[in-house]
Length: 306
Ligand code: MG
Ligand code: MG
Ligand code: MG
Image (cartoon, rainbow, N blue to C red; front, side):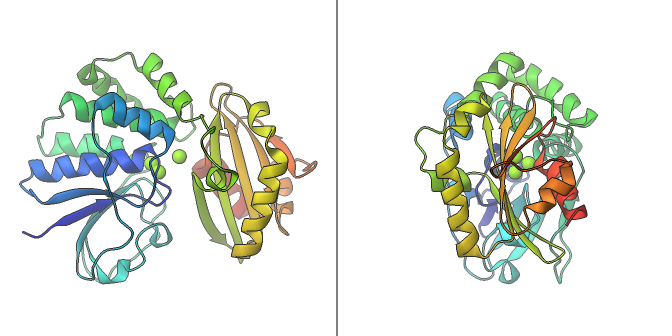
């Protein structure tokens, strides 16, 4: 058996990193000893906290793979978010909880469910295959579920996510509220990043109805704290818009305590944001009450209003 490379999306979040590690464990338990957890970008502060807590090493950083390599994709099914030569590798499996944005010329194991986190699906797979989840794996899985659902407060969170998290909490033997808040707060530390890095930490490119957009998100415990950098952020956004010829760049500054978002939206189609949320952008910014989920409360809403 050759090597199997496992990766999530670029600008990896905790779910993408954890999913590659967990999938490697899953594959090994199924007898594939050459499953390798990989990542397509830097580890963020929140994930760093999780890896330090569990003592697990970060997946191997890769940029591309040889043609013909066998791969498993987790937490993404978006061709634009992964390796450049996806058409020339062999996808063995996909486990994901996003839109289906690829097709293949061959059959593969594809498991997608509209749940809050990839790890909720992985949890089900371990059960279905009768595999044991050890304490470290349980802690990793739980961390990803807390991250993607913002401690079960995001509208993307389902009963399945809550059920998986409850059982994983028992195996992990930790107080998920205390641990989860500490983990989320670790992710709000932007102090070591440049403006360019902040804008790229969790950015997703989207194209809809002829609109080229990037929606980036940062978590914070204090919106005013991040807004102190507004002028610099605007300069950085303007630069990205020019370089990538975007119609819209939307930065979501999401308050993880109060579950709201302040957005900075720029570009020749910033009007979409005004229309979508019935707000007026003042100096490129508006408050979006109750908005926390890019996947559920932003991408579909701006797509519809484009
Ligand atoms: Mg993700
Ligand atoms: Mg995810
Ligand atoms: Mg996310």
